[in-house]
Length: 202
Length: 350
Image (tube, rainbow over all chains, first blue to last red; front, top):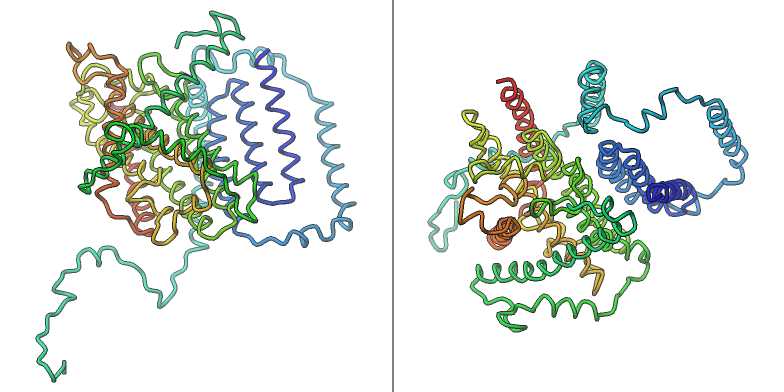
C-alpha cells in the first residue's frame, strides 16, 4: 500500500515536472524542474530495489551535470520576449515532431511483450543474498569487463580531446610559477641601500 | 534499529519512525545550540576575549537568545528577487543538512536508516548542498550574492571530488558501504581504528589512511565554507557572499544548515577514521561509558579542531584554493584509492 502511494506520488511528480521543464517561462526554473525529474526518477529506482543506481543518478546528474546546466543558464542574459518570437510560425513543425514521437511511443508500447521470467526477476532483482552493488560489480567487472574498459577509454579520449581543443598558451600572459615563488629568497628581491641626503640613488 | 514496521504494522511503524526522526532532530538542534556557543567561546579564547557571557551562566543560553531574535524579526525579500526561489533556498540547505544525518550511526543500532549504500547516500546528499547556495545567490537578484554563490559552487564541486575518493578508499578497506559496518570493522581498541589500522600489519595501511584523514579534514573545511576556505563569504571582497540579502528566519535556516553540515563532517571523520562509537580501549573502565558518549566526545573534539582552524589560519587566495583541490588533493586521493585496492587484493589473497 505504502509503496503504491509512493510510486504514484513520485511518478506524478516526475511527469508534472517533466512538462514544466518545457512549459516554464524562466529558464532557471526549467532547469530546477529538470532536477526534480531526476530526483523523482531516483526515488522510483529505490522503489525498484536499485538503490545503487538511484544514488549514482543523484550524484552524477543532480550533483554534477545539472549544476553545470544551472551555471550556464544563470550566466546567460536571456531575452524572454525574443525567446517567444516565432512561436506560431514554428508550431506546426513542432506539433509534427511531437506527433511522430507519440506515434513511436504508442507503437512500441502496444507491441511490447514481456519476457517469461520478467515478473520473477522483478521480485528478486539481484541473485541470492548479493547486495545491489556486488551484483552490479559482478556483471560489470566480470562478464562485461572489456566493454566496460572500452567505455572508459572512449570517455578518456573525449576528455583529452576537450583539453586539447581548449588549451591555448597566450604569449605575453603572466603565469604563476609556484616553485619560483616558494624558492625565492629575501636576498633575491630586497636590497638595502644607504642613501645620503641630497644625493639620491645614482 | 528495532523494526517497528514488522512488529506493529505499517501505520504504527510509520508513526514510530516519525517519532524517532523528530526526537533525533530535536537532539541535534539542542546540541547544535551549545556547539555554536562553543565555537564562539573557542574563537574568543584564542583572541583573548571572553566571548558571549551575558545570557545565562557563562552565556550558556546565548544561542537560544539569538534564535528568538532571529524568529521575531521581519523577513525582507529584496525588490526584483524571485520570491519562491529566494525562500526555497534556505529551506533546501536546511533539509539537505538534516537528511544526511539519517544514515549516521551514533550508537550500535541507533541509526534512523541503516541502508546498504550509506556512504554513497552521504556523497549524493552532500553534492546537493550546493543548490541551496546557488539558488539563494541567484534568486537574490543582486551582484554580491551572485558572485559569492558562483565562487561557493565552484569550490564545493571541486572539493567534493577528493572527499568522494577518500570515501572510496575507506569503503574498499571495509568492503561495505554500510556505515554501521564501517564502525564495526574498527572495533577492539584504538589501534584498530582506520587512522592507525594496526590490525592490518605488517602492511602499513596507516601510511595511506593518515594522509587520507588529513585530506578529508581539509576538504571538509572547504566543503563547508569554513576558514581558511571561506572565500564565498570573504567579507572584504564580497560582503557576506550568497547570504547578503537574507535576514531573520531564512538567514537562521542558512546558518543552522551550515553548522549542521560542519557537525556532520566531524561525525563523518569520527565514523570513517576514529572508530565511531567504539571505546579507545576494549576493557573496563572504558567500556562502562555508553557508546553514544564516545561518539559524541570524538565528534565534539573534531568540532573543536574546526573552531581552532577558524581561529588560527588566514584566508586562502582563490587560485591557491583551486590549485590545492585539483592539483594536490585529487591526484593524491586517486593514487591512494588505487593503492588501497591493491592492498585489499593482497590481504584477501594472503
